[in-house]
Each structure stands twice: as structure tokens, then as C-alpha cells.
Length: 257
Ligand code: DAK
Image (cartoon, rainbow, N blue to C red; front, side, top):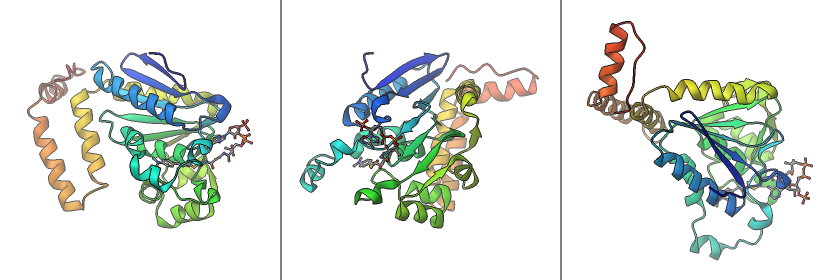
């Protein structure tokens, strides 16, 4: 695969996608988003891949959408082309995806991190939705997912002031699941990814789908959905294997079916 703005690698059952536009702090230009979308399609179609890690550089996960491209957009261009579709490839990706964040995760950068299932951040990470400073507002979930992650008051503070929070504050508010030293970020992300990658792929996908449902449904609907997915695990060999392995005091040998 010949990418210009990202790097793609596979290690065991984990795909690592690195945003790689260092001169522009990984600003998310159209071409980068297109490549990211293609890489996710590839990781999705490869049955050996169970987990994806999305990372940037030490200085920037991504400093947002590319402002030099964005400045030329018009209402008409937005109406004619729905730019969000390619961005949403991340939020609709069915396998687990971990954002490994160092440095700036601003605007669209913060939004794509929030589209991922888990965010692990280095101690130099900085999160924010500074679109207000550009005379616009977040457009890839920054007013929606952020509220769910950190609550209304903190989300309002960030969206209305364009302020930036550090990794410690992001951890305190529940935006990230883990804060690690910068020099340990890759290692800690890989440890978690490898742990998840050992599980049954179809069961992982069902578990992810069930958790995501909570964003869109009330508790009662979510519980019904969860129960249906729970029941459907009983049609899979891996459910049988998991329980038999426990009862026979041995590790499970999942075959992803
Ligand atoms: N776009 C384009 N270039 C960027 C950039 C960005 N977002 N961020 C940084 N750069 C470029 C800088 O212009 C500079 O380029 P040169 O001058 O060297 O040519 C280079 O990267 C290095 O940046 P700085 O010199 O500024 O580096 P500093 O360390 O001094 O500052 C910074 C780092 C991150 C604080 C600063 O670069 C900064 O404030 N960047 C902009 C952050 C920002 O405002 N981000 C939000 C962008 S709006 C949508 C989906 C999503 C979105 C919109 C629509 N649809 C699907 C419809 C999202 C919108 C946004 O993200």
C-alpha cells in the first residue's frame, strides 16, 4: 500500500495506522482522510486483524482539519458533497479501535480520537475544540461526543472558549481511559491492543456494538439490544469454547467463528 499521509503496519492481530503529515502537525487534509478510510477498509477486510491502533507523532496526534483546505469551502460545496461520510468511517468501523494520543489532538483531531473506542494518552497530550477561534463550530462530533465523554459543563467550556486541556484534565473528566508517560505510550497501547486481540473477533464486534448502542438508545432499548446480542453469542462456537475452557481450567482457543 502506497500512502502519502499515513503509515500502515500489522503486528500479529493488530493494525497500526499512523497519521503522518509531520510538517502540518498531521492536519487532516482530504487526501489523508481518504487514505485513512482506505486503510480502515483494508483492516476490516483482513480477518486476521482484530484491533486497530490509530496514532500520530510525538508532537501531534492531529491538529485538526486542514484549515488551508477548509477556508475554500462554501455552503454550496457542503450541500453538494457530504464531507462527513469519509470521516465517519472511523465511527462506523466494526472492530475495536484504540486512539493512541501524544501531543495535539485539536478540532477534528480530538473528534477522530473520540470516534475511536478507547483513548490512551501520553502526558504531553493536549485536547481541545478550538473551532470557535476560526469563526465556526465543531463538525465531526465535537459538540456531541464530547458532551457524552466529559459532561455538559466541561464540553461547553471547551467548545465555547476554544480552550485546551492537558492529559491529566482529560483523564479526570473521563475523556481518556489511561494516561502514560510519553516514552511508554506505544508500549502501553500495544499491551492493551494485544490483550484485546486475543479475544474472539466476532464476540469483540458484538461487545463493541452493544456498548455503542448506549449512545443512541434509552436504557430500556439498550438492555433489549444487549440481551439480543448476548443471545446471539450462543450461536457461535467461540462462546462454547470460552465456557468449556473455563470449566476445564485451560485458556480458550478461539477460532473466530
Ligand atoms: N491546518 C493546517 N495547517 C496546520 C494546522 C491545521 N489545522 N495546524 C497546524 N498547521 C500547520 C501550521 O500552519 C504550520 O505550517 P507552516 O507555517 O510551518 O507552513 C505547521 O503546521 C506547524 O504549526 P505551528 O507553527 O502553528 O506550530 P506550533 O507548535 O506553534 O502550534 C498548534 C501548534 C497546534 C497550537 C497550532 O498549529 C494551531 O493552533 N493549529 C490549529 C489548531 C486548530 O485550530 N484546529 C482546529 C481546526 S478546525 C468536518 C470535519 C471536521 C472538521 C470540520 C469539518 N466535516 C466532516 C465537515 C474539523 C475542523 C477543525 O478541526
